[in-house]
Length: 237
Length: 391
Image 1: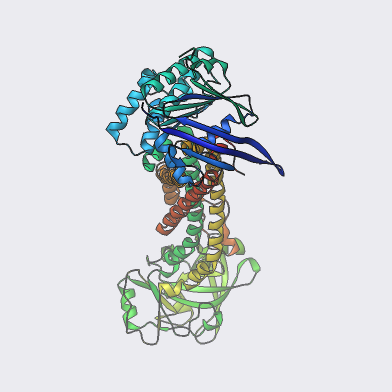
Image 2: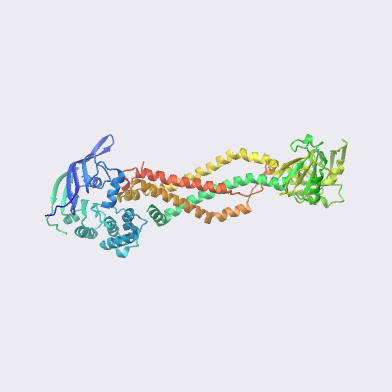
């Protein structure tokens, strides 16, 4: 039997934020292992620590205590530049509010991670076209974010996140700004991508609509993992 | 890579880029225009002195001191032969200077009486009018400032009293034949101009002069006896000294203009960069390093300055050229205050002014692009992503 590679390994993670003269503990004693190709959701109410955990995994924030290893890189002692390199080469991000660059077209937004990775022009064109095709936006290639619907913007953000075929895709409330139909479309696209490419997906969400797509649900409450549930047969996938 | 993204950002954000470039371009224009006016004002004083008074330079009687009227009585002699040859070739003209008194409308006024060759065309003075009045005892040319002070108009007559070479006071009647408009008050206030031959005869100083002014581009004559040669640089040394003394003032004004321009650019640029906090956070999340983000925004600033230079050339170049050619009329006559200020101010845009302004404004744009982006990239990416302003 083939052993799957470990993508995320978190041990005894504590994250505190200074608030006034005191500290607010956002995450406490979190242990988590994630292997290649997983499709998991960090689920919990607002303030449960799911976005903080996602940010720490993505190297956008650092742990107060404990150890975090992502894709074989220890995030504890890495510099900003090293973390940026890990994100650039091996990670993709999807944000709740899309975070598309407003002056760029769909094509240019999707192309950006490839430019940052110094991929040459012809290769870029191929990869961008394929990513845009995956998310079904081939007819919107020259549109600007301001001219598109929320669903289309999020599909563009997905194309941007997967265009360089990262090992890990982190999505923070990707469907929170979308209606039911668009939410299902987005989750269908992501679920399909997960089966087609070997990327691992981690969602931070409290959207009930997408729970049915997840194959593993980690419940967070007050900064602690209270349940780690494996779904053998996702209902919506 | 950064250049490609910077170009894309710059041309993608049409309105933002347009505003930033326009503000920078206005700053370019204002600094160059106002400094050019100031430089023009200072250059004008020098140029007008050369055009109306100094030409190529002068040969002076050794005792003559233009600033000391007590020397006038003794500062005259026969013009050295070689200098006289210049006059014969119409390349120079002589001036005989003496003190005199005039009595216009029953008043007494001390004046400097200067005899000048009427048919000279070496300096910009309408001296030819002195040659057209053989029926008048002493034809007199004065400036408009003098005419106003003495309440004189063309055709008015008055008594002129002078001390001749034999130390005898003589007097005769002078008639105003022309009132000249000159921007050089040194030719106007307290001066009366009469034909040189008339002055030589009145003062009993036949063939004599106090100084001789020669045309531009003539080389210095060596054999001038005891007369003294003064070139243009010597003659305008006071102006040069004034300009030099005024340099700190000019620099302060230039600095103030630059500071004002910097504030405008700073506002536009900083606002634009801080509004892009979320974009910076996104770039960092996508894996752009802090130094590259700062480099990108600084490069955008540099391109902004470059575009502003081109826009200034296209948009304001014709305006600068128009004023540089036609000047700007001033609302009042400053010559009455004893200031060599033109009635029409012509800005002078020196190469050094244009280059230094371009370099300084480009540096300002680069600094105000570098500093805020550096500050934003020092924030946690998570804060930048939320679009929180740096504090």
